[in-house]
Length: 396
Length: 63
Ligand SMILES: Cc1cc2nc3c(=O)[nH]c(=O)nc-3n(C[C@H](O)[C@H](O)[C@H](O)COP(=O)(O)OP(=O)(O)OC[C@H]3O[C@@H](n4cnc5c(N)ncnc54)[C@H](O)[C@@H]3O)c2cc1C
Image (cartoon, rainbow over all chains, first blue to last red; front, side):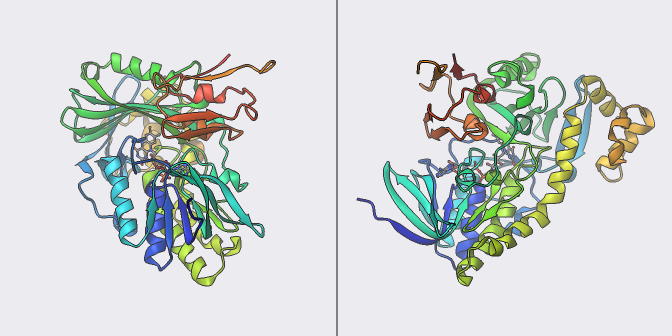
């Protein structure tokens, strides 16, 4: 018989957002239990493994053996494959390091454990507990055995497939246009350029893009995201990705050693991420950058705030929504403006034809931008193709 | 299942890669992923077929 448990903070899901939350709650004096339904943290990987690096110090992450390599920047390829290069600092939250994502997730879990977090694997939340109208923990199964974990504060860090928010009645459902369905091959014996993360735009990946993130000489993650509202048949991501690879000899000669899939939200962030006794963090709160599809950085940045507020709520003995609102305000202050701006840019980009993408990248050839911003890019395009920028007047 | 279309997921490992894309998009929260097992709650599912589209490898069939 498994005993029912009690803790201050229960974190459901041991991805980056969950581990960061657990670490910062434990560091601030709360008793923390983190549960994970998988048997191994970080595995299987569901990630392109690209991430920016400027945010790492502020959340207390030190780069470790999980860094595969550092890239100089991003290359954006138009449909006719003209290139526009962007320096790493400006290239969005997927460009900087290419990482070993399973190692990264484990390193964050180790940090959480070192701060005092208890961790249980093979332990899935199957429902939430309620007490006087507030969320008060979860029903779980560990190695198939059901029991209950009571908690002052419960955290839903259960990723894209999140159920915790829905169980609590938080509006986390997303529409077809708000999701990219993704497929990626890790390929060896390819000719990749280890200086860049590459992005291919246009009809090769409707509503998304094809990416090539190099992991080492000859080794790269080659993947695709397709907007669900633009999916026509079964297995579109696979069909598009295979077609793209077949057209690129540098990759078609490669061998696939891993297949990765998954969903990425490209929506606005959730309207409400807290309720009495519960906070949502990371993909569960739809914090992925809707333009780049990168979610690691945002999940970690919000995770730190979430952990700190969880500990404060425990010390104050007040897990009410009004108290947890500090977290809601905190993460929105840091992330929300950019999430909305990039959501808007994504909405526009999704509507562009290949011809327009070609013109945009063509207009940028040889242009030296002082500072890389949507505004500056559009000005450069406007000089050469005034008709193209009509659709973007809101940005100018 | 007399009048509802039958639901079939090829989850024997031949097609399904257990990525959870279908789980996250299901508007009725009736798909559940447990490492290498996907289960559908047949009673809740309305056969809207969104999961069929969302599956990156075409492992879900409703017919
Ligand atoms: C194909 C693909 C490529 C991507 N590429 C990139 C990229 O290059 N760069 C980037 O920044 N982002 C990328 N992303 C997005 C990124 O992977 C996510 O944003 C990130 O993993 C979010 O972290 P998280 O902690 O919120 O959730 P996750 O990492 O998904 O962690 C959630 C955890 O919760 C566990 N869990 C779920 N339900 C339960 C339950 N009921 N009980 C217990 N545990 C549960 C899961 O097993 C999982 O371990 C990509 C996503 C996909 C699908």
